[in-house]
Length: 80
Image (spheres, rainbow, N blue to C red):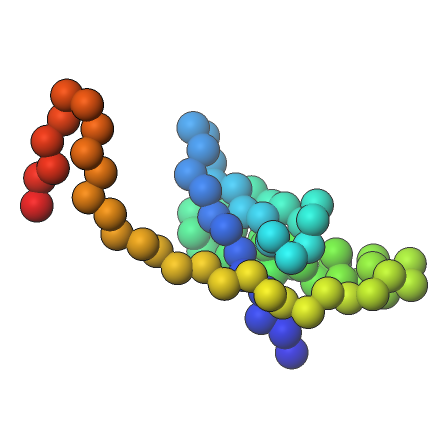
């Protein structure tokens, strides 16, 4: 079993997700639960297609972390 990093972004009307280690592997959904299910299916299909085409399956290498920063933008103040 492999564990791929997934980026989930909020769009104007829904969520979208992509897998940096698998270019072209994307999905959308209305909730986090839906997007997790959808991107899991998309990853499985993507990997199956790569295997059928004889392409090497990339090892997961993306590491994601949330980094908290105090942004100081012109005309704003930082609120704790």
